[in-house]
View 1 (cartoon, one colour):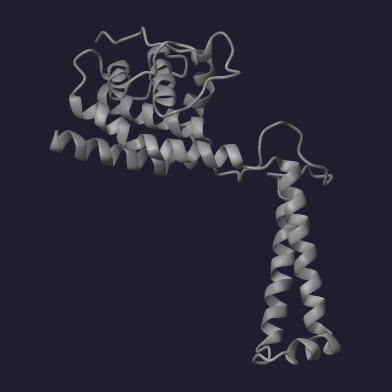
View 2: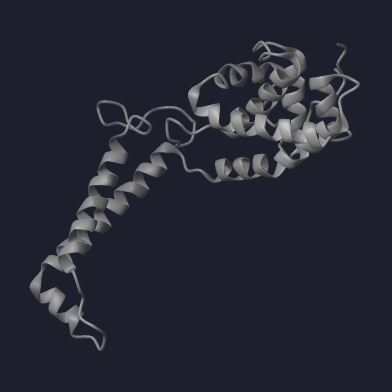
Length: 228
């Protein structure tokens, strides 16, 4: 099956790829019209993931935030445990603090959670130092926006071709890159061969953490094909 291979790939290209072009990368020149609409429906989710990822703090910043949470929780716990402080809190023209013991337990739990999160492998090494690297803080099972994009293409590719594209498949990479740009993504810092960057993400889409996204994508594909 012959597929399109001439989409503009740089940020400075004269035009942004369309969802129809994404569809042709995956399914060839005779791609069904519903496929472009399928990709367009996923674009807002991809844009949202990208926005959330852009605002995600770095690992060192996340540890600072968690440290503040721990310290604040312990401060409040000590305040509620101090009789004099609690009496003044109860003296205001409001109802007395009920279940202060329960609040203290919740604050202790919050402090322990913050301490454990700071020491987690997502943020720290075994010696307690912040894990190196420029990547932002994320949970081990969280998927990046680029993984999300690659998962959509891989599952759609598997739907049409019976199996995932090989990680170095240039047509699949072209589809992922076109979808990334069509949904508002930039390509600054991707180097002179941006398609090669997708090889890593097409390997990642085989991991269990991506399975839920792929199942949902497959469900939408089946429904779109039937409603055609």
